[in-house]
Length: 624
Image (cartoon, rainbow, N blue to C red; front, side):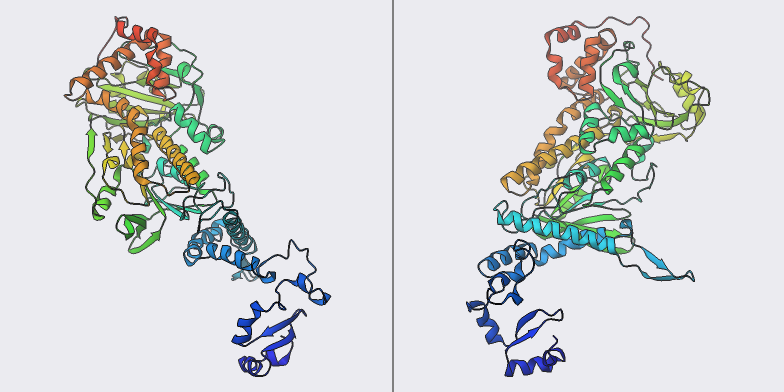
């Protein structure tokens, strides 16, 4: 204060409380104010009708009136009860200790090195003090005000219950809220399922943290936690459509990176047990690429979302709980350092190596039952490049599937980015997989398709990689009598498939779509996400893919008559494909999940399958 009695020390205020508890003075910028220094007067002040915070009420003294328009000057510092009381209550809901604590992670993300903190350097070349983080501070203030202001307005309009908050729109999502505690979600695993889940959660949570134990590469390179990344991957037509919806422009971005797009019916050379179907235009666009390229592009897209943070080299060691049956975060470890991360929702997308059954046991829940179908199928893969001047083959992909009990060798090869051919050889029924380059070529020569002749003219650009963890396994979390609040599981953590059928990435996309649907519906009902209901619905989502993968795999082991009947029909269907374009198209739609089983219920198609195909006169089996 300019008044020397009020600007010197604490003692001056003590003197004012004794001699002039209500004192007229001016602020440093010259604005006249009344300074109240004693409790009794401060207590009586709000009830005195002569005193007002609203400058518009100073009708007899223009000196006090605000020069700003009334609409812009309506704030807590210039408002009387009951408006002041109402707005203060709304603001208090947005600034509870728990909510303020939850802002820390978002502010840390905005002010991280990724958001361009700058360091000044003196003329001598030595680092100087950090430059003022002007842009970072603006980002924090902009986001903070947007989130908190929308929270107050939405509550004021009765759009949410007590303690709920609206959100500032951001890239890839709309302004949404989830229940009463939708602040932070943690996703365990940065694979396909984890990235898809993070994308969906970013529309509903203030902050999403994806935790990955691997060191995430900055390029499209394989990583240790995804050993299957060295082998051929296929994204089915339905999966590509769902991913494109969540990541607009994904197909174009992959195509720009060199991933070709082609029609499944025209570009595939399907070497089936009963022959090879001729090319048939199906208007079913397929894009082929390596697993590392797709994961890299998706990871980059997810990391660019304003609400998402990716943390690698961090291992989740357990669940954090506040009370029986309630998960409130995860415990993590990085080297010798251990910590806890609080979360309102934990999503286990850690894949085949999940520890969730053990974590649930620690919470006192019974062990979920598991169903395993292991056909003992193994892979060996290699990538080849086309020499200069060498033309690519007339096909974009070759599929030679296995079939019990006679066809124990097969392959799947696709043209991918960087003008390369990715070849995976399959073996079942005790057949040995190739280990060396010579073994790889010798194995290919025993196949009926064109792989051996094709790779003979190409240049290997990778070693031979083997993989044998191809079992199908389903964990019945949906059958547990109790399920903890604040936890869900999806992806390979719940249901894994033999990768030979190319269903994993598409199922991950469908599970993310299920999560989005439930989040949207519970927002409408203003309820929490029911984890047990999610697991039950997820089990239904995976049922069809589970049957498509396990019916042929069970044929490699002794099975009951329903499985034998299913295999008989499936084999009859596939044997009809080479000789009937309509059946080929219908089966392709079923395989790519753009059509359901009812697509085969057409009486004309069904009769063709049941009557049976023509016999291939030059059918050759491989039983080595």
